[in-house]
Image (cartoon, rainbow, N blue to C red; front, side, top):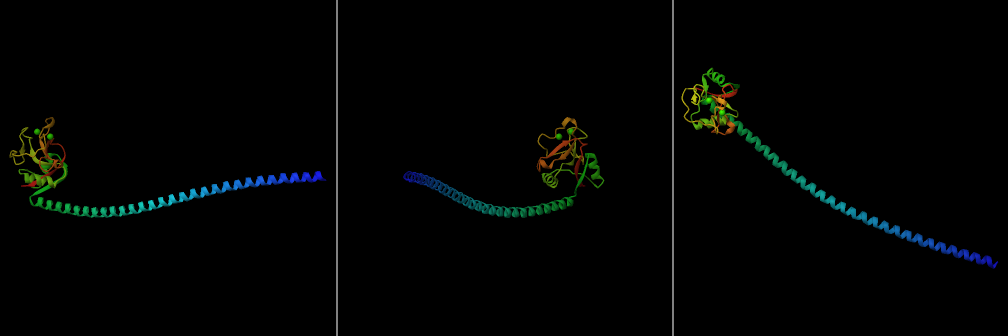
Length: 218
Ligand SMILES: [Ca+2]
Ligand SMILES: [Ca+2]
């Protein structure tokens, strides 16, 4: 009987020790989990703070870009308006030039023809290819056209002796640099080349080239 009670006591002691150890282990495990949980919460809180800050920065940037866009739009509108005004001025100046040209007996042939064909076209209409004997006339014609045109000057009769269509010799030429050059011995008719500038823009070319032309009534 006494032995049995002793065994029971030992057994109880073992159980108590086991339960105590298990309780300690569970407590430690709980403590670790709680610490991990707190760390996760803190980390999430930090992320949230960072994201809130980034959101604020992005909102500021969006507001700044929106303001910039509005400013650019206003500038674009102002420039579009200015462009329309300038286009209107160009049209008006072009009309004025056309009226002035017509008043002075000039007209433009928009068909591309050889020098002789262009000359014949002018003559059929009581005119001839234009004679340019002053800088004022040279500048006026250069401002009027945008493409190369025939003028009434050639050295068809005698190489190197430029003659106007009224048979008068050339006194003053408004030649491009290094022109006339009678390139390959085959350049006897003169074109005016407006993109080279308003004054020195003549070049001798082959008379069979096709060009628009400028006529002048006698
Ligand atoms: Ca020549
Ligand atoms: Ca030439």
